[in-house]
Image (cartoon, rainbow, N blue to C red; front, side, top):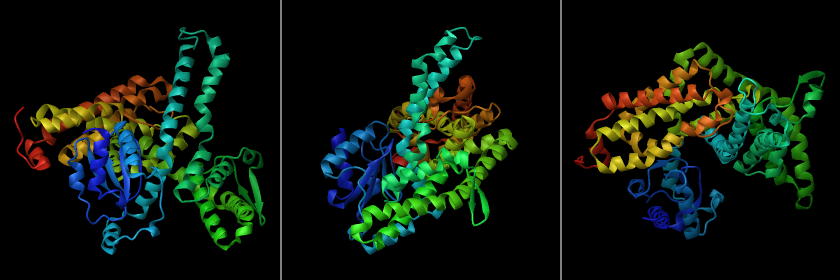
Length: 476
């Protein structure tokens, strides 16, 4: 079926446009919030041609794959008349009591809900981060080629206006990231966007470098620009939203526009500098210490293996987005994140597992699914393979994780970093810092081979296909 037919079929299985509260899409998934879940059959959505999988979470997430999801979402918007990413007030919907009970029963922990919010804040920024990182990667390649030892380009090119402009364009987003994170946080928690942006500006205000200490009631507080990083921005912007909501409820309409933002900024700024910055700085330092100093530097190949082998389960739970602030904090402080290349091995492990299944199975439907999902999986978009192949089959998911660990173990010894966050796989190669492309490629090959061997010999049996499709495996 074409994209419009697929959008209509998904809508039909969700009980029509009258049951749609809101929807949006990320790189691979159509995320739909429905008013009533009681009559929805998720298995019927999974069987639609073009659907790679369905995740039943806070929203119903239909996995369609990169590129296709945007086209289907556009058709979905045209059919329903609902603008994508339009959030409605849940109080407006008459949700059945049994649906509420079912929804609460499926609620995840507070930590998972928090990390989901963080994902919603950062995911919209990923296209810009990838593009900016690629521009900086090009600038780094030019710089390496212009090195006198390389002798490829004239070193004078590094002083040219074009090169300086290229570097500046690549660094624009990274220099203003606090503003965008603050705005997205305000949007996520339904506050005024510009106030969220101001919260980000406070954390990264250049004047804080000159002040260094702030005297409050006789105590000298250590302050400085960037302390607490983007986690501090999220907490500060969230605090701004809460202050704004509290003040607005008590403010006369005639004074709201003038006084509410004023009080929000003044009180929120004070709380940010006195409370949020120190706490967020301590949290980020602790996370960085555990993941880098303990797991990688102290743990060595064991730490690298464990990080790579356990990352796919985090992806399936949506918890991997919670690591984005850690990556960006490492990039800001050290110039690159050594975590990202290691975690990228998780996708490579499942690519190897998918190849093993493709060569072993005779089921044409499964082979077609793998054939369609492998190209984007190799490029670093792993969700089609996760939800369309290895996770539904069960054991291959485990062998893919175990195989990925070998690639992570290798990279942990090489100190390979990435200059920005983004996709993994081959698409991450231009973003590798310090010209360590070969080490990263070797790590990918190791993870491919590890996932392939473990899955081919221990992870796949044809009976799995019978259970998956409720049919006997057919001959090729």
